[in-house]
Length: 315
Image (cartoon, rainbow, N blue to C red; front, top):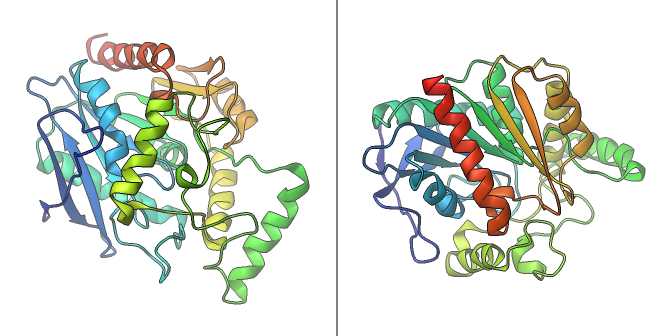
């Protein structure tokens, strides 16, 4: 396995030191990027699975939260986003050929974690789309001691009136070679550049929203807009499939805000109601990004998550 140095942009909200980034090639020859923060004396490593449109640098602040509590972190640029290989001629359209392809990225991350001798045990923190990727991974035996999900995409929040059209269009458009196009209502402008902070669907913390905005202004190569019809087809199929699968026997915490507007909240409640050893935390007035929410939300969450992780290694 070959790990080669990759860029890690530390000019805006850098993560903790020491830090590094690496390129790694997946089993199907896609080049993805990994960001690593490995403080001295870390008692384990958090595997960070970002959401759709996200990139390694956005999780520097999350890595800092864990580093200050004695944990290393490794985050990933999934195929098709960040500065990993983009999959369409238009690099601003989010795309994946098959949702299961993300598991090839997971396998590469795990190989890299072992190759870099990142401190064990491993733990999972998975956000939004990463929550769907992470759920399949833990169901299929991902080698982690415990898992945490924030605003997990175990279903997509689509208006009841639009659910049937979304399914029809995402099925039919690829059949007429239009699967690379954006569904109605989507644009190729990243959300944090198109929308103001006021009433945004991500966070109530102005500093965190400004970080997301400023990182994309400084490094436009990390921009990503709306998803393709193929991505939508695959995401709908994957979340439906996951809903039919039993949760693994694994300690788990899941966080969802009372103002969550991106993912399907009832699916989260259904999943956690049947997860033995799992607990659901409903965060009052929280938006989608619990670990990038205002301090009175995110600091207790970091404390609780770290306690879960470290208790699984000593309990």
